[in-house]
Length: 315
Image 1 (cartoon, rainbow, N blue to C red):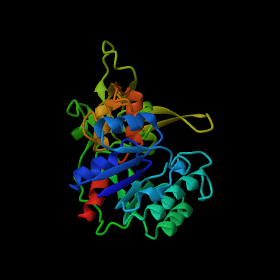
Image 2: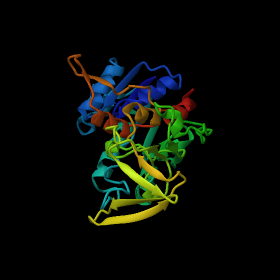
Image 3: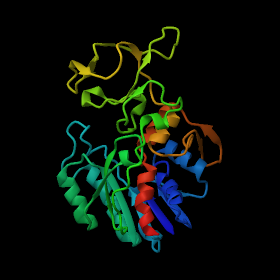
């Protein structure tokens, strides 16, 4: 199979194809993020890398079998203030490069992904352009994170995957010590700012709660839980500080909350351990990837097992 991947990132699509047992004869990746491309090169030196989708004539890929990709949801996501609610903005322009690639390459099969939170106007536009309705799959069925995404595809026989009942305890490097709750919130590109618990502001209850030890320098963020309640401050988009109290099923005491490690973040996306540890530049020089860049590229990627589940329909 010959595969054309737009907005390829760290080539989660290639990992998924391998996991689905599909032989890949050629894989061409279109991506502009240099760190993501270097991680892809290190893991798959045979991938052919192209640049910006705006500069590519996709008719050179006539005869390719599969087009995959998910244009950036940055402009469409509900987390963005004044997000685009119609397809005539930058987000729509980027998506139309996918449509152009599909028409010019003539790929028989396609898979397009985007955030479930995008406006219905945009979902309808995508469906109109691609000629299929989206399938909504939450990564929580196949991973330890909640990640609801829409998938537009003409791959036959795609159904909801069977729930594997994977929890945060299953993916932590320390065996899940002190964790309360089952699922992490969605892995995002800004995950280095977050901690190993679901935002209590969203009333999700996954957290690492370990008795605070002032001698341990990693215990830098501490919280007091009293009478089964925790009080937290959060910052609103207008800059206001909100103070809220939530119930939580944890014994009273002083606790610290830690971040996910990069390996744990990879496991949330069902990537191989240390997949993002190293990168390789165009001169085959290997470099170590910083934690911040690892979190960013992982968060911008796909949940591999969900993509593999869909791609198995090709077999």
